[in-house]
Length: 328
Image (cartoon, rainbow, N blue to C red; front, side, top):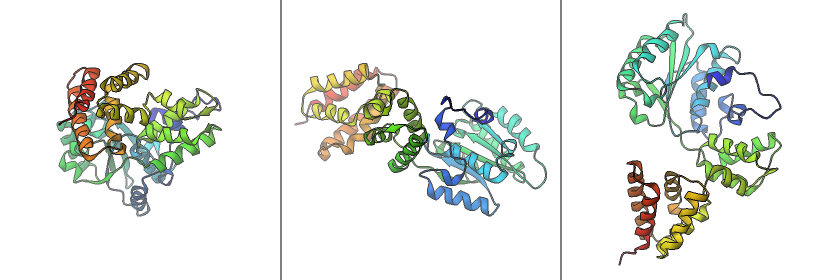
């Protein structure tokens, strides 16, 4: 992020990555996190920003919120000099706390504070988190820490208790659809309603994925439609997933297996992606409660086996076979 921010603005060549080109510059521009935006805005208005912990899935606005806070506090010309961004998944040991963070914190003098943004903080080792806790105490008068993570449970309690915790939820379908339509209009791209629906489905609450998918689909033709989106994202249509499951439940294992083979071979989906789509779609299928429960049970078992290193196709075929063998 910090390197991208230092690059010159993109020209009309269209080569700039849209997730950076259309990244919200202020808190108010962030889609789908209205309550969080309101609370963060009140901290800035009162000039009383605490340490912050942002928790939530990818692509929901955590990094954007951190940079927007810095922009609003320091102004567009000065925020980069007062904002240190580190990715804890790359530098997860205690040295990054002892060297880079402490060095940056020590260079802040006077009444103003600087901001340290630690992305993917749940990747920090326990020792590094303990050192970070002490650093937060030592430099609390001139440094504010913003920690971002996917799982707040992996952040030690002493750090959580020193932060105001904000839990970012997956973005609503309406927020993703609105943003993608705005970008398409700004880029002069024609996108169909079915294309927007496909982008929303493929994104599953992840704005970054939706925007990247829109940009990729826009290179395939003059119109971004449903077919272009599913092709570029290697995502199965919901009806394909539903057909595969209903065929298996009806006892037609051969037909269900043929659909699975098409998804894995022709569409190029990974087994984990098929599992994710199955899990998302269970309650959208017209299934009896008992069948839905059976399917959820099999999905959980298959997901565990794939995570442990078992062959994806064998495990998915076993899932369909189990569904096809109805219990008497």
